[in-house]
Amino acid sequence: GLNSPLNPESSWSSKLADEKHNNNLPGLKHSRVDELCRKYDVTFDREGQIKLIREIDSIIFRVHPYALAWYANFNRVLYWNKFGHPKTYFSKIGDYRGIKSMWWRDSDKEKSLDKAMKDGSKLPAGKTIQKPWE
Image (tube, rainbow, N blue to C red; front, side, top):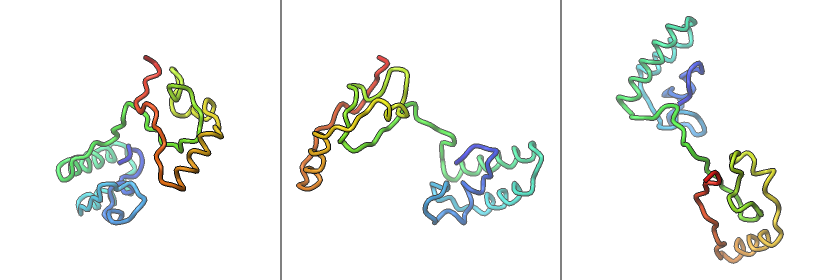
């Protein structure tokens, strides 16, 4: 789900439960949540919105335990193994967004990747957990 002040309908509406590519990730279908989402659409005072969101949250946690606004204290990076990069992938003070300025095209790796894609061979993987700040 998304944090308020965004409309809860975009995350919890039953209409979205069976649709792809939306924020109702667990596929929640709950008539009371739908009713509260409709009320939220016509509630313009902040206290009223907070009350509605809290009730929606309480229902979600009861019927479908879910970690709202959870985030991981790490970055996952998925890439084609055709780039050269520093030993630790990114800098001590940066994160994944700095990769574009630190990585480069490696023609040997690119050839190896092309070959592996054609013949099904595997490429070597580097160290998968990186802690450049250590």
